[in-house]
Amino acid sequence: MRTPKSLTFDDSLLAEVERTKGPRSTSQRVNELLRRALLQERYEQLEREAEQFFHRPKAQALQEAQAFRKASIPSITRD
Image 1 (cartoon, one colour):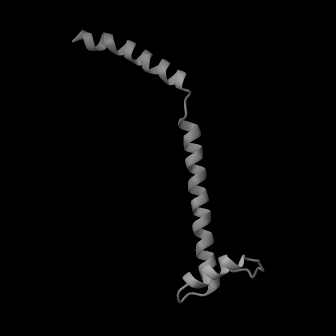
Image 2 (image 1 turned 60 degrees about the horizontal axis):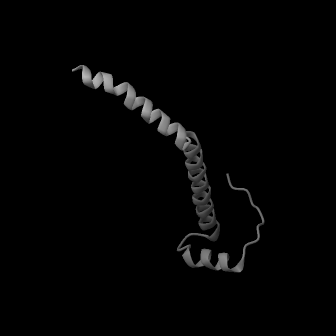
Image 3 (image 1 turned 30 degrees about the horizontal axis):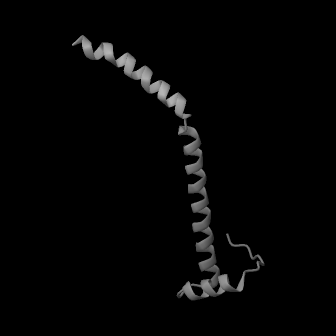
């Protein structure tokens, strides 16, 4: 569904849209660019969320690695 909306654009942006729109209408080109920008923002947000989820303080990661090594030694020497 398309809704008419009045927006203002910088002249330089409008000139770039006009230059790159090809056979499409200006509205189609602007819609395409907005979709791309919104998708890019979603990807960037997901990237930040993943970074926060997988981030561990360095000291905690070191402590876990040492505990893993310590626990692995008996299983390696058993054979």
